[in-house]
Amino acid sequence: MKYSFSVLLMFFLLVACSDSEAQKVDDVLKEEEQEEQIEEKDDKENEEETKEDEVGEVVAEKPAEPQYTMNNVWGFEPIDDAEEKVVLLTFDDAPDENALQMAEKLVELNAPAIFFVNGHFINTSEKKDILREIHEMGFPIGNHTMTHASLQNISEEEQRKEIVALNDQIEGIIGERPRFFRAPFGQNTDFSKKLAEEEGMLLMNWTYGYDWEAEYQDAEKLADIMVNTELLVPGANLLMHDRDWTAKAIPDIVEGFKNKGYKLLDPSLIKVD
Image (tube, rainbow, N blue to C red; front, side, top):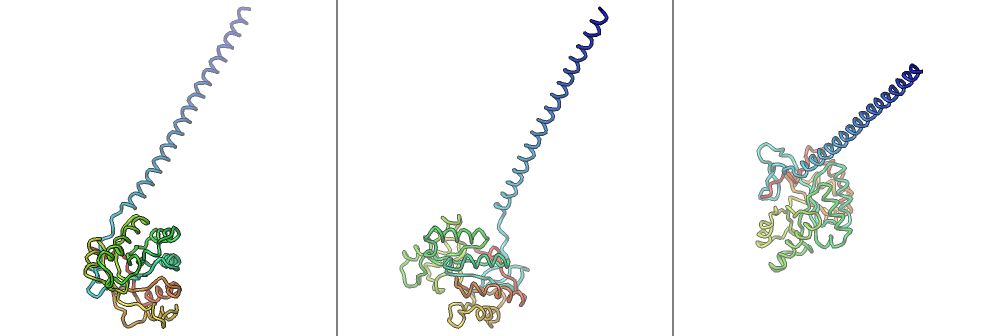
């Protein structure tokens, strides 16, 4: 009887020990699982922080060093050993009817350009959104005055409103002020030149342009003259507008310059001050 009781007691002790060991193993496994979850969470947070850092680096990236300077005939000359055979694409009177479509096509063609804006084209929420979208595609937004007035025919106070008020409006939409200024009809005054300088903008006119002439209000004819005109020179500043025929001509214009060995000048490489 004593023997049987001892055996039975030993059995219960072994079971108890086994349960205890099993519990310990279970506890260890749970602890390891919790540690793995914590490590995974830390890894994920570190990965997200790295992504945020990478984005921050892009946003905070310093502007490219200027490689081109404007000459006294409104074209561009290379600084040091920059590529000489370039042309700058610019589009005035944006965003009227075609600017967004034009910007999308330029992105597709990897073609940089400047869009010069009039204030009366960004007075609705829809047009503000379009301007913001064009800017987010990477295109610099230039100042082309508030109402496209002839600056030579208005007072200095009115000129200030035409130029500075538009800069304020653009900044409110895209978060930055324009770096480039073009007067309507190319008609500057001493005061408009002074304002552009005070605002930190590069004042520019153009080398040539044709899309406002009746003869070239056709996509095929416009593309031909833009690429094959005798006025084409390295560093040319090309004036075009937010027009239907111009929008249709963009692919042929870009391809035409490419075939002639010209590169399109990135506005970020232009020396402003």
